[in-house]
Length: 585
Ligand SMILES: Cc1cc2nc3c(=O)[nH]c(=O)nc-3n(C[C@H](O)[C@H](O)[C@H](O)COP(=O)(O)OP(=O)(O)OC[C@H]3O[C@@H](n4cnc5c(N)ncnc54)[C@H](O)[C@@H]3O)c2cc1C
Ligand SMILES: Cc1ncc(C[n+]2csc(CCOP(=O)(O)OP(=O)(O)O)c2C)c(N)n1
Picture 1 (cartoon, rainbow, N blue to C red):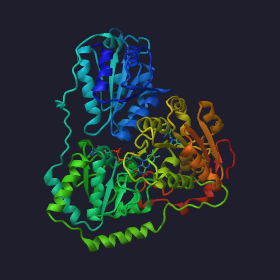
Picture 2: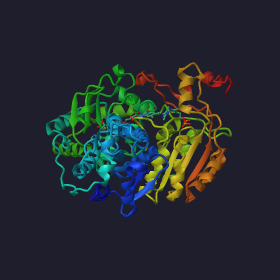
Picture 3: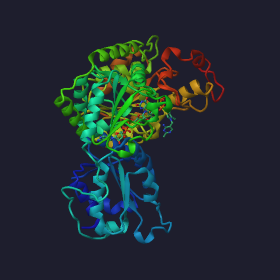
Picture 4: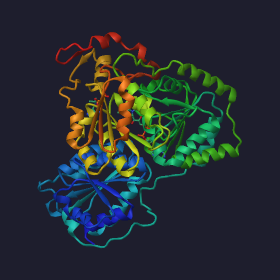
């Protein structure tokens, strides 16, 4: 086989049905092989960043690896953002890049860049293939590394002469045993036993779950629900873990962290035993580290040993896969006939309910302007009975989506958490829709973010992917404006979205459908119309310009120093002045 044929054969052997890519000189041999087969379907994006985010959406919504193909030089450098995004959010991504011929490497050849050098810090692992005889082994290893243990992105850089060369293709081994990389799945039983004892003795427990539960697969979510049921413990989750425990579940406290709920953050602050499941104590969660949950003993289940004690010291680490560890934990709980301290737990729930009564997500929908929170609530009510997937861009809309859209199942929520990449949501929606052609796929967007990868509307139209881009249009980089208002003396430096395009006309120019809604009373009908249109839609939802997203823990502050809606500085909002000296109301 030629190297190019091996690349495509390996994809088939690893069950790849869709590939997101963009051609160029250094990958033409691979494109030629793709042309001559129809098992692997190639989705032509409009920018390599779009290929990466589409592959991420595809991966997150299916549990399978996302695959992308890019050319050398600018193709590879355009892939850097999604690679780093996937690294931070633990998404399995296999990126095949073309490279200049081996004889030209290092000569400043046309479209040459040091792809392995550039992508080394933003991949879990990467390879430059110098000999066609190594190619099959490396491709199989790449799929293994991307999908096993803590998932992540990998790059296989294939010079053009290696794509033309012929060699022997070996199919993937039935079981990969890697010399040095062997992630541990089962947790140490004695530690799990100790964790069970700690949980049974808890008086003010909390379950803090994260993206690792989603990564582990649907069985892990089922076990999390069972653990919450068996113990009656309250559950909160990070942004990345939403849906693993249902938003309608009786133990649900809402998301925690910077824009998390009052009850979730105060319960984290005051708990005596914290069970962290597949989460990584991110700084949006901990706030001021020395004030983070000062009186609790912490148990941390994580597949990646480097996540343990990275920022927060834990008393009881358990290294292993969430699904495996929770199965053992529940088995031991039952075998040992463990029971919770019911009286203490009832008292703890009473306190939590008092915090909940603070109604921290309250907002007022009166007057003729659509409040962004109301728009998400209506979107949720009108789509919750369907098979709906939500992606987002980055900003206030992302946080309102996390707060007001109720996720009942895992793998339905795709957002850029770690890197916070504006421009993620539209291509991610394309990837999700390609994987789930019959589902309703909505990108909850901001007017600024959506312009970063808007060109992928063209790909959506080409592939008949009827994604819905639901823009909360506040004419601002709202999240930036919010920080400027609250933390930078109200100086709104360059956060006003000047010269916005007419999103309705833009949708039409792409061959999609454009809808606009300006009044709360028209919202339901407009959303219904968006849902029923079987084409890509851009929905321009004009919302209150100066609404802020609360609760908010300003960075570097402690959980109990949260800002709540009615404590917001109304004066600051009223006296806002933008970079051009305009007064804003
Ligand atoms: C504007 C903005 C605001 C934000 N505000 C918030 C906020 O208010 N609240 C919030 O929660 N986040 C917020 N985030 C997201 C935040 O930055 C982090 O991305 C997020 O908190 C990390 O989630 P996580 O801890 O679940 O970790 P992930 O990044 O999902 O990492 C998963 C962890 O689980 C482990 N793991 C992976 N697979 C397995 C497995 N199979 N078994 C066991 N362990 C596994 C990994 O090793 C890792 O440690 C915000 C982001 C943005 C852009
Ligand atoms: C690529 C990139 N550049 C800059 C930022 C910093 N940033 C975070 S939120 C935000 C504003 C987002 O505005 P918009 O998309 O309109 O959403 P809103 O906050 O108004 O809902 C910016 C600039 C980022 N996250 N990503």
